[in-house]
Length: 372
Image (cartoon, rainbow, N blue to C red):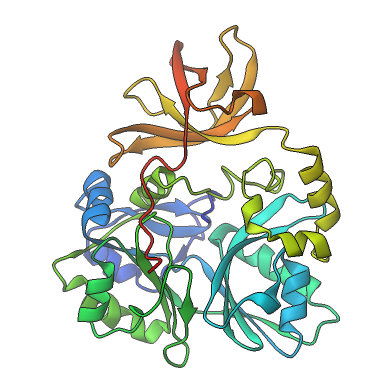
């Protein structure tokens, strides 16, 4: 879950901790309507490697927390999303998505059950307003509330994140991957993230956020990490970026994300977009999302057209960049089903030169989530 929508630099929203990032020497750029820290003095390469080796701190407050609560919250969520909210245990998180009537992915989300009739959704920044409006629309007739929350959201990611959290006196180490809870009023912690590493996402009131960030940064194992390294980390981990790898024109079937819809949910077929989803599932994918390894040291970027050996257009690169841990360029894209076998060669053009790419399994770097 990430989003790639970019807007003009005028009228950009600023993060509540903007001054702290400025003081840290962040370089800012426009992302999804926000002025976001892209890199810090450490630089994108070292920020990426530091997260893989130690612990990186990311300010992802551009993302939106949406609470859903009320007597019919379970029924509503089981209609609004392809989930069985009744089967979600208290404290359990689940990756899901908001589908349109054609089973296209409007956004991908993380849903956490916090109490019998209370849930938390985390939505991508560029889609937050549209998601909220769509959820409110779908909530009509259900006895529940959809509430947009104002919070700072920090992600602490990396193999030393758990030790850092414990040494800072914060709860959360008792969680396993994809579990979450509210340790106190207006706080929300999950053991999750978008780097492929063990880690936590901590939502808290704006007034408490600076003190927490400074406390975490006072630990020598922690460094600020910007959006640029977050992108290379998630790409190595084979995770989708909404707006690039998945869009309202992409179905979960083509995107290889059908695992997020359990069998019983498919059988009940009561969720929004179910008819189109099941038809698409029965028909099978029209193309496949795959990892791509360019046969060059030069990264191949999103938008690059893919060809077969005879120059026929067969697909497109949706994400691409340099993978510091992989020690080479990495990419994701879509190819016809017959081309999805690992090692299959496809081609693109880079500055007039024909470049070969081989289909590569995902992820490029092993995911190291803490599952107990």
